[in-house]
Image (tube, rainbow, N blue to C red; front, side, top):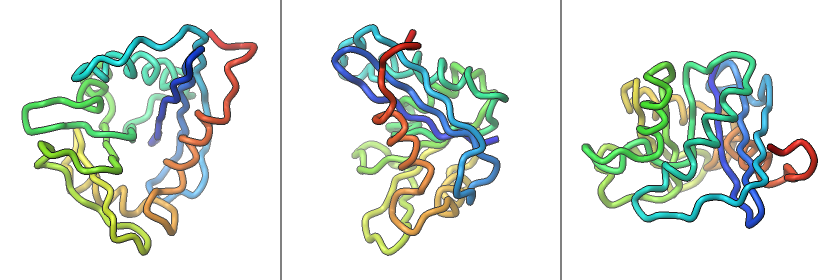
Length: 172
């Protein structure tokens, strides 16, 4: 199973979401999970973003019916050859049990190993990085994802799921 994940920060809490699906080209998820926290998020610390986001990603991944073999994040796996990003920290936290693919919307100056991927009719690339698999294979997977536009359908849906999920009752 593949899973795409995202996190939405609010002043009064955090929502993390995961969509589990079977194949890169799937147009719909097999399952959707959300993890809600009514505790305010930790303050952002430059260079330490992963410390803020990683716990929520691990919590929502733990709610899936089966551990994914590939996790797709919104962001970079590697910021540079020797500088881990959120995805590299997630790969380490999962003890290599899942490949991690990063899909970033903007270039990062030091990310020399990011592969640009053009989708749909867009002339603006996505930037793909990976841990646990060759980055070229990850880029082919992202290129094959469903959707006629720059952003794959399921990446847009997981973002929307985060934003649309109320904190309310049942949040932890």
